[in-house]
Length: 331
Image (cartoon, rainbow, N blue to C red; front, side, top):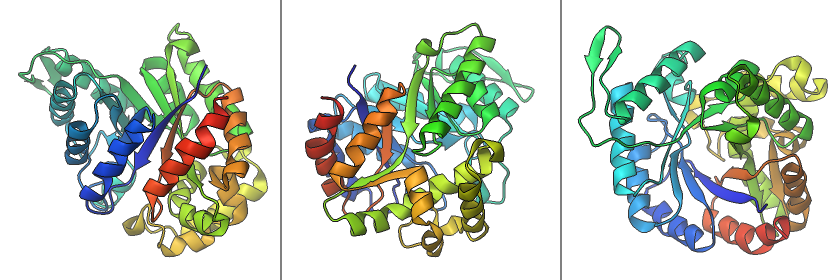
């Protein structure tokens, strides 16, 4: 089976910059676009998705990801019902406990119990039902819509929750094959707890990525999003499930991480993303270097890659990926 490729964007520049190259990405065969939702550092995700809906006809349109803290479930139900209606059923509700969005306003991430509750409320609201939430009956007065719910997760308990209740899982554990096996193991544990088969759950691997013939430049630029992934992995993956030397280097980077520069390739903390970290959490290099690594992940059963392209010239990276990488991964 051919692997599908999705583009992830961090809207940290004017939204007009993204629209043309995402439309071109659809022409090149990309399956979806995932837009980060973090109000303090990025442009608004839902405005971005609405703009992208006007220029695409086939791609999945997903939050990559929103959260259960800064947005009330009634607001999220309304957001996705509207987007799904306008985009003719292409909306995907990507949701997590919250990271930079909540950190930058002094809030704490949602508990997994709270997130599960919010997901259930959103599903009921989008189905046109009245639901009691926090002691009050609420309803969204829209014709019923049904967007798949994809939970973003890295830690064992969140992976298991996703296995129990989600339509899909967006897992970010890096490019190390053992860590991918760790993620799949916990998703499958959760699926079994709910009497589900792993095959019922759509698996998306979110992976820091960049490919170019200019190896040094593209690896330098990839460190911005790689730092995002590295911090998440350090925080969520149990120490015993990762190599000790990697854990030590991640610890040093985490202590200097600045959420106000979240995802920026110019952030000072990117200097702490060593080659060891970069190659563990990301795939970045020449086309000849990245092809076998993506094939290896596909051999582990990964059928959907979500690749945040956070470089100075994302359109060039997308064309390189479409023309020089994907045909060889799917050959």
